[in-house]
Length: 336
Image (cartoon, rainbow, N blue to C red):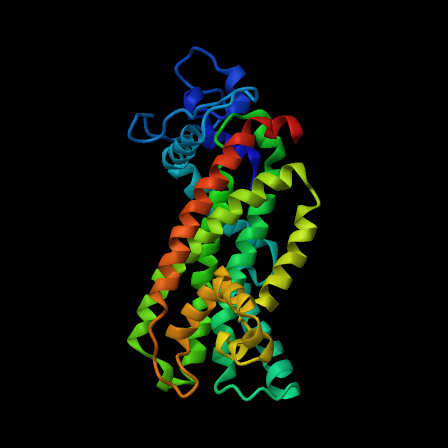
């Protein structure tokens, strides 16, 4: 996305003209030739309000920082929407297939795992393509959002040095853009489910509720990695390996019930507790319950207790990481 476009969006404070043209304004009642006016609504307490900027030496309390973070996102809803739209257009133009990769990539991953697990390892899970796709789709959403959030602030280095605006909107926009991609990913899911008509149930309507829980958890992780990546630039490289290991330790290629049957987990209850407390395990099992059900084809409702616990934990994670982000925000321009 172009820094000039975002600067123009934020240029409402300078009378509606792009920031780079502000010094050339003449008192003629008309903009200079060739300068395009940016339409905007008058700034008010109910629309967009100036953000609060702090010096790096100030040490406000956690409650105040959390309030600032909420106000920043709420008052910059239009900017977040613009950033999401720009991110979707950019990804759609970067490759030949564009956003179609959100449909093709899960199918290709599903084919790889079906060949490896179903044919080579001879895993006899019924309807295994649907079983694995129910985990691939939310995992692709999670990894894409986290990786994009990690680079969301660093990639806007020039903009951050030129314009003052609440940087927390950048990871929020990166995470929100992933929701659109997840929506595209549901297209191949419903196409695959046509091959397994007996597994279609009204429980599919619960998918948005599970997705909302995942969005909250992803947003909390996004705040953490986006701020940390500014000071530790190797985080992006380490993050890819951590996420890959996280997927294999989560019940994506297998079920939690299969782990509970192993001797290692039966002899070590602590390992079983950690496996069940894994946030992605809770989400995978919830998605799989409504999309896949039981191996014999019976429909299931998700574990509402686990989803409720993850929701509370995600809200706490958002609060902690938002305070962490706002605490470091005054140093971003200096470090970048």
